[in-house]
Image (cartoon, rainbow, N blue to C red; front, side, top):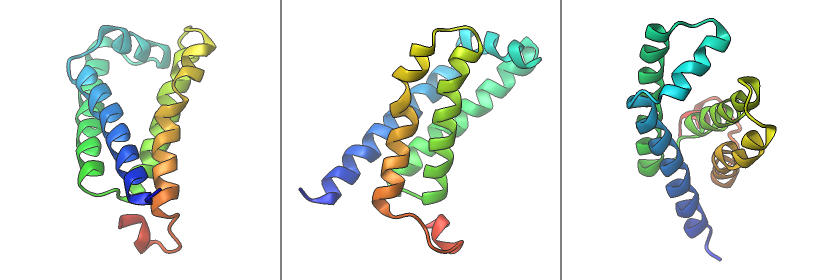
Length: 125
């Protein structure tokens, strides 16, 4: 199978995941605002942080559709892992973490498909 098809499937999947979660964050999803208190962050500050995170997620999702920038994909894999891991930290079942492995696995797979950078400059390509 042509790797370009696989790349586009992953780009669309990663973009959908980040744009979707970003829109929830921009809307101020109450459950997520509550999770910030686990880390000592109050409601008003949590709402502002969540909005900024949502905006970044949407922008990254759009970026990946335009061009799969390696540094962005590395961040998306890290962020997808962290946001999945937060669920059991805030008291949700560990299966909520397991269910979200694709949230970090898809950006990591796309990064590996486009090629792990060999130089600092390649992280920005």
